[in-house]
Length: 140
Image 1 (cartoon, rainbow, N blue to C red):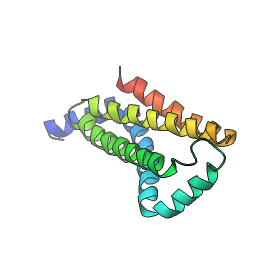
Image 2 (cartoon, one colour):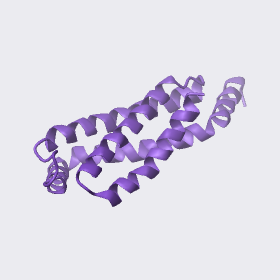
Image 3 (cartoon, rainbow, N blue to C red):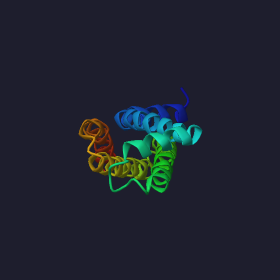
């Protein structure tokens, strides 16, 4: 190994837990965001039906757009954050992406609770725990 490669490998080893958490969240949020972009109509009609009896029923398109932007931005920031973490050890961008992913999950949780989809809300807890653990590790 050259000195730069050794330094790069040391940074990856030092931050492997954070990198793996970020990869998990990137897959989760980018896949969800890309799915919304590629099948906007399908997602929109599903969500409208899901929220037909909730106070959010008339706001579905704008709320879906907000979640889409948050998911794509969180995924992109975490992707760039992995690069910074692996090359310089800087955590700030990854932290912002992780915080944004946690906020997205809170928004989704509010929606699930208002739709009285308690099982759906419960499944978000797993993702939220992972996101918060990432925030915790990256803020240390």
